[in-house]
Amino acid sequence: MSLDPIVDEKIRAAFYAQAFMKTIGAEIHGVELGRAEITAPLGEAFLQHNGVGHAGLTFALGDTAAGFAAATTMTLDGNVLTTEMKINLLAPAAGERLRAVGRVIKPGKRLIVTQADVYGESHGKAPIHVAILMGTMVAAHPKT
Image 1 (cartoon, helix red, strand yellow):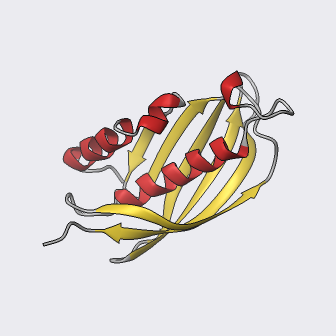
Image 2 (cartoon, rainbow, N blue to C red):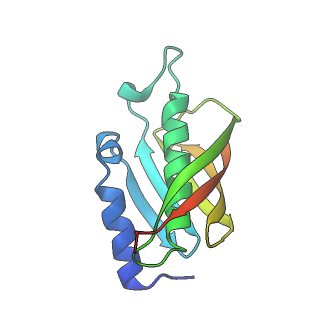
């Protein structure tokens, strides 16, 4: 389901305001109600000693995609914060880029249950399912 253009603009502006996402070259794609997709190049600076993507990058992308998926369910003045997130690493993070798809499993007024899947992608090859994350976001409304 498509988002109100004002909500879409708010989500994208918040994403691109994050210095960490800029640092890793991440981009946000496919924002819909209850869903967000982000990608980041899997460059040499983000590889661990065995030559595969660092799990910290995988986690950061999955957590961010899940968080922005949850944010699509909030009011314009609301926001979310991660309260807990579990990751299962399924395969080494390899490829040209990582793609994280976050989605809302159960929306709520206070707690929002989310899931994210992270894939390693290379041109001309089938994506590799690198990780699955399950977490809970808490609604962070401004004080009134």
